[in-house]
Length: 410
Picture 1 (cartoon, helix red, strand yellow):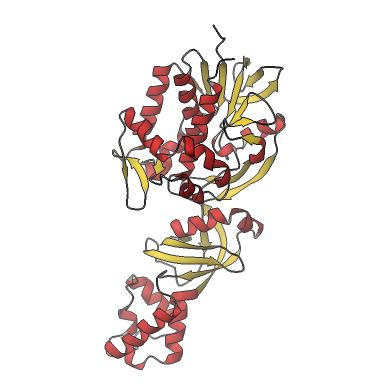
Picture 2: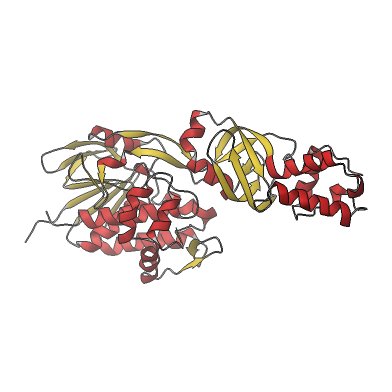
């Protein structure tokens, strides 16, 4: 009988857990152990989607799926042909967890509770005999000829044949240090998926107001994103802003998160269409007050602020609106300039770009090209995605591939 591998997984998040399950299922004789430094496993799963867990996204064509990854899309194309959102849905449903698709493509458990996903994963780990240790992480690794010596933060050391780093991309970045100690290069981590700090009288007091389809451009850069836009207590957020932050993670970090943002409050209304709508309002609604009625359906309180920013008095009617005032109003709607002075992470779903350099990893098995027997999955790699379940899908996919590969007999 061929000897079974001893497998150690550093990190009890989505990628590490999924790798452990894939490995134990593919080879029931393998000894699979997860070591998680924090008190609980699957912490990010718990808080994802406001506690509902955005498991994946209903995008089932790998060529389209990879377009949602500012970093790692090219490398993930092959892996997504082997394990993609359709496989994620099937995996959970085979274990009694049904997922639902929302209008924007995000997929959640029908229970709307992340605990459903956590219970499924931990129950499966118990069924498959995966050993899970919390409050104990991997502190140091030494590569021997065909094995690894692994020192733990608690209780000494152990030896394993195969080792997976799935420690995530933040919270001390311990996994990056471990990867470096084994010969890997780390792309410096910087925040991704963050909201913009804007202190501007046009937005003050409007927290909670949103528009369904806006457009935001970062002045002097190619960053130009569309989507729902949300006004917050500290500035702007929503998918439109989060996409811009993901695609511009390194560029915006270089600018120290200080830049000018041009906002088109109605993505479907270019300057010409707005100007025509204003002109039409001047004729058809001459006696109505400009500040009290928006011909384009913007939220009333936001509309009032934009009207005021254009220098239009509260008691002015559409009939007496001058061409100059109409032009200033159109500019506020189509190309208002807002000064960004900083950032905040998006809820608890902190994501970084950066991590282990991708060319140093064989994405067919998620095995290191530098250190045989070492595997990497999830955000410890220089992979990140826009919001919408795509980061979890990268974790499930890379974890599953690593688990399958680590299960092979020695």
